[in-house]
Length: 423
Image (tube, rainbow, N blue to C red; front, side, top):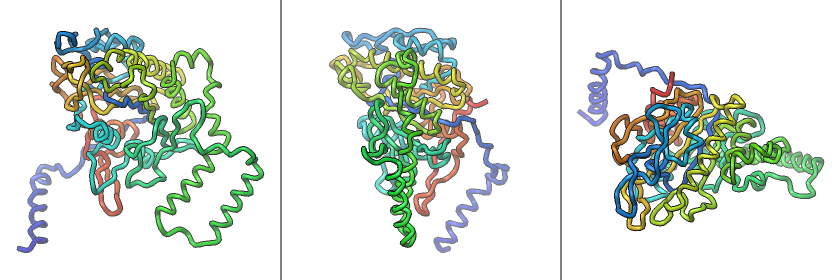
């Protein structure tokens, strides 16, 4: 028997039992009705035991493992959160803290950031697309003259389109006081002059053959998109001063203003917005609370609480919450033990990611960890499973393949949605 015959016979033998059981048909796809995603990124590693999965109180001075803060009850019976999430606690019936997310990347922030944005380990042969780029590829923009995917934070390859190409990348900004850099017309370029420039561009394009290189085609498409995005109507989206002062104050500082801008971008038709919280940290270390960095961690948690709770209430008041899935992710969690300086290390084997809105059947919490939030006790959720849940909420086929050239790549590395969150 040659190699081809051997492989054919082996595949046939593997399929026979399944066909005999009538298992050839795939189970029906889970499909939600969400239209947008606001993804909040907590760079550094949010400690689940100090936020959405609190346990018994610990003591860093005595090296007694446990939570750094007391816990409080929420709107959902038997679901507690940290005392500094007091505004979110009454809204937990619109939220699910998925407490059993896990991966095996714990000691390196860049690799874990890549894992939590692409759902994959770093590969030397495939440049995987980020979750935002996959959603942009599958659903496109929900409005005219807007990008499908925006990043409010610093650009990074882990947020990029990978093999999907530049057309499915992001438009970014780092300052809510102004729109994305490079989209506003330079001073002195009025509408008639802009029209003449666009006419010249059209003439140049028409004088040659279409670009054969796909990279050039991507570049041409990027030019077209930038022209659309430089319109006054899109620029107006970034005028936060149009919002009522009382609402802006409720959202809080710069991070809160980013969340407010995300809501405006949803209204304008942007499909996927990542809002980064790792900026201007009040504790000097952000969510990466080794050693003394943990002492001011409560300020970060309170800032998240203010913006997150206001975003939920604001979207709900505008009848957008069921159409908008809010996601909170981080590289990994933190262990219950304290390090020599009173802070915490990294933990990837059990940590919490959060879902809110999006038309899901929320339950406050999903999955259980042990008495110290160190090990998964029930209902583990892999990163591909978590990504599949997001895809399903948006009506995206989480079983399909994307293609890197001719190479099929499973869209979520074969993840399965959390079925309990869908009616």
